[in-house]
Length: 124
Image (cartoon, rainbow, N blue to C red):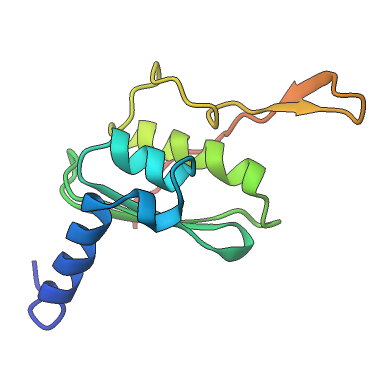
């Protein structure tokens, strides 16, 4: 793996995020919770539906993923992130996460549906 000019900086950021995931985005955020649950994961939400994460170990070796929800929806981004981690083998489908299949409610608070990610991995 060729990273000599950047390796020390990348390792410092990785170690800081792994040591203090609650400082990345707050104690209840998907970023923090996933970094606490998934060994070797660093993850961070971005604006407009972006999400970046790196998994240090997987069956394919180190993996970096950038996700973009076209309309910028946070509600759609979080179940997609959980599904991606399932597809990478880093998160069990049985792991209880509130973001996996969020319920949709109408203005009266009645459940009217849910969001369910339909995605697959394509390796470049």
